[in-house]
Length: 477
Image 1 (cartoon, rainbow, N blue to C red):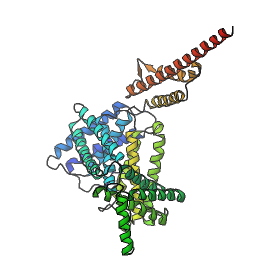
Image 2: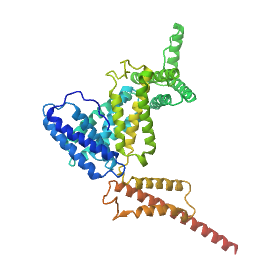
Image 3: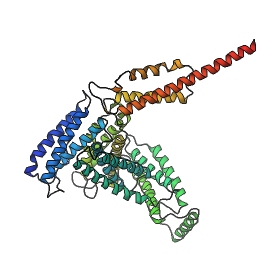
Image 4: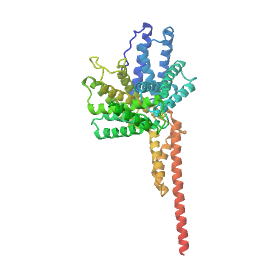
């Protein structure tokens, strides 16, 4: 069982029964997510959700005069909602209000880290903004189906995310269309350099290549009056440099001061980080090695999961990763620094290296959540087979189709075998009708349509060749 962050406020005796029931519910949820002998059933998840909401109602009645209190009840309650949220995704109810909970929690962590890092891509913000809009829509649609206690909580958390997102968007709003691609490139280079920094073997050649890219970008940005460094040479050298800046700046209008400062800071940060990396070459101070190893292990497992998630991931598997990351994130001091066992703050190299791994892991969880299909895990084997079939048929069509309908026989056999699994038009698992029927049926129809098009093209092609051959024979006679 994963542990929640330690509470600071003593427990009210009246809340002890609530805590006991929530602990039992959390245990039930964890047992359900860990049982791989059977699929997670929709009714089991819905029943557990109802039981958790019942405890929320009782808790709210006790806390009429202390709404802002946070103790162990709240941390265990958060665990329960996180698990229920991921379980809703596991059973294919991705677009239901409870499923939003885990996504919003991860999104808030990600936004907080983007704000702290002070560099991010406009595409990052665009993706998050679209997903937050989707979440609002799911909540509005669930007004009559779910507890107002949950919906109010989700609405407040989305509002916090939207506020942070608006602040981040404002920071980038000063960038002109010409500068956005260059800023994007700087963000990409800095992130890639950080990725190189945590490789098992330090990739000297690759890092040097990124240094050259930085130098090229610096030259391009000089035309906008943007520079990474200020000369510390003689008075004559400074005058010459200022003259060069004025000449180069005339090629493009000088950007707004906010945009100029934003890019200059990021450009300088890239060069400083390159120099720091080359000096340290992946060597982490002993006092922070344990935290670094934990973060590296989490990052590696999540990246492996991202490669196989379509076939092997159960969304509830992400809970353990979320909690481990949360504990590490919350162990940082109020200034955001990591501290060793003796209370000494990390140097900039260790600090940035560990923050990169922490942020990369949250980002991977975010992408795993948004790429989760609204299909119950009970139907995922069928869904994934159809996804593969569709890709294969697209490739066949892309490469010129088939010369004979017979070549489609293996695809048709597989499609018919899947189609024959339906009972009264539905895919059944025992007596259950798992969620995601619409998605699977749509995919099945798309595969049949592709196979039909390929068959018709092959028949038309064959008829054309036959007609041409007969005309040639007649001409010969």
